[in-house]
Length: 303
Image (cartoon, rainbow, N blue to C red; front, top):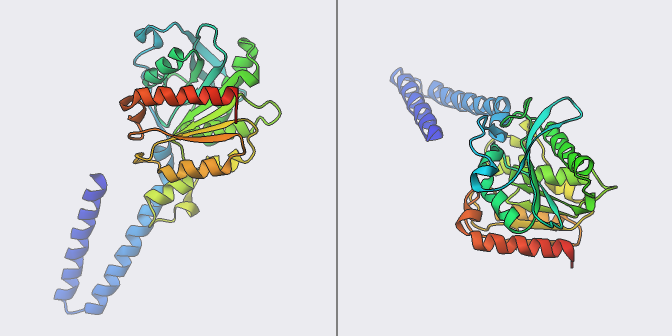
């Protein structure tokens, strides 16, 4: 809606200015004015993209509105220190006799309190889960940056190893949307101690790739300040990779899930879910649970 209003205002302004020039009998001046205005608008939009990129990539929500206790889950409320001096808010939700622990890297909007539906599903499947807020999200300190989010994921993984004595090969790295790229890059940073598996859901190949699809008429790749290059990271990942994506995803196209699958080393699998980017796993929860059961079986005995 905002973009429609902006373009309407620009069109009205250009029509008025060109009309004024034509009234003065100067068609060449009117053409020059149109070209100048087009160039100014284009450069202005490119500048806005450069300046406000972080607002498009990160959409943190400060207020933690609910906790796992509100849906009947026992949990530990944690503060995890990062090597660069930040403190992350996190929850550890145990499951009885869990074979694996999921490290949950969430998407770019909200905070951990907006992921309770997923936490319930993971718990019902008999999985421990550690979910953390990136710096600048929820009750975590600092401001989000690309490198900072990777540091946050690595620090949360190390917390599981140090405080819960969980072996790296019992940890599943799981990321949804932006978190999928965070999880992929995190997995690539730990080649000497690979995880049990990497599950990437509804994620993209890289931020520049995604930006170019949304704004094909702007020099997105030239101005990109963020990478989150999941495609390249997957080439260095040495654990089973399970890609989950919906062909109905209206935000991150299914083709990007296919490209991520192609980039990964075997053993790997691509599985389809249904529905929209943000609501599909809830709208088709039975299918989503079934996909996760397949993922656990695949990680346990990859083929």
